[in-house]
Amino acid sequence: MTLPLDAVPEALRKHLAPEAPEQMRMMLARALLPMPASDIYVVLSFLSSSASGEVQATARKSIADLKRPVLEGIFKDAKNPRLLEHALAENIADEGYTQLLLLNANTPDTAVEWAARRLKGALLELIASNQTRLLRHSRIVEAIYFNPDAPMALTNRVFETAVRGGLDLSHVPGYREIYEAIFGREAAKKLAAEAEHPPEPEEAPPPPDPDEPREAPLPPEIQAAMAEDGGGDRPGVTEEIFSQVMAVVTVDDTKLTPEDAEKAAATGRVGQKPMHALIEEMNVPQKVRLALVGNKAARAILIKDSKAVVALAVLKSPQITDGEVAAFAKNRALSDRIIQMICRNRDWTRNKAIQMSLIKHPKTPITFTNRFVRALGQRDLKEVSRSRDVPGHVARLAKNLLQAAQTGVKPGG
Image (cartoon, rainbow, N blue to C red; front, side):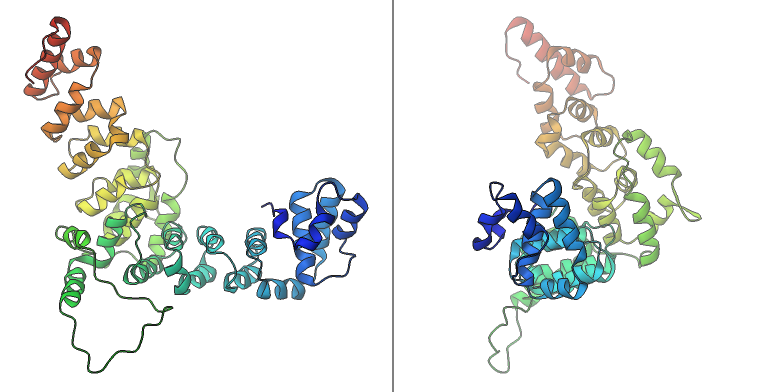
């Protein structure tokens, strides 16, 4: 990570600029000029990331020669956000340094978000325990949720803290599905009832602490969404088994075709059990997270789940491809809601393969079918008009459109 020159104290910048005398830059790279330890580290960080040749090599050696207690003191007390961001990126592999940088209140929230996507264990727990940061920068919540090394209990706790703190998490992919999976129908009803009829306080409550999470009533659209699928209907698999499955389904399989991914899902194993059997044993929150974080193989299994909230989460995955959606659009066993959701996504329906699959799918609503057919070119209209895989009214519409193109008479539709 490159540290910009404007992160260096202004008085030192003229000695570090590329046009500065090489002898001065080398003296700074060797840490020979007297200055506070924090300034020494800033200078060395700038030269090690921005300089070149012997100056850069010398600065890197000087950083390596700094005593650990010196660096610990810098990371604990530094106030320069740009320096702290740089230090976190450069020292992410060192647990002790990373802990100090995460605890430093001056470390930028964006840097903590970056770390939350990469860390695990006690350091990830440390990030999750800082409610002030979570409520100030909601993307940390998203980073933890999509970190495959984050335990389910941790992700659920963080998400719940954020929602009860009144954060708008609607930017998180699959927000509605995550919300439903964690809170469930009964919890939503309880919160809604409490919001409508709060108990009378016996005495005036103290003023709210800005650092404490606030419990907010659920938004109306979320309350409505709870009506169909509740929360987990079973205990689910243990955290250990879930982590083992997560390790398998987060392996990069982007180069696989949807068909090969489905074969991998059918034959994959975790320990002594088939992967699909272990996924079936999971509860709804576990399945939703797997649908959002997992790879193609996981999505191939979960798109068929009986819980609509799980199958819909598959379509909200940030990693889903047009090829997968095209394969889903051909699957006549999928629910009406899945097909309708694909139909409503304009980015997907611009894809000709997806559009043709939806035209031929018996569960595609007629309003969408008619719209897609009217957008076809003559070659595709001929295919649809002759196809035995489409409903009769669709074939007739295609024939009418072809005839209209030839005669110039607009069809009645």
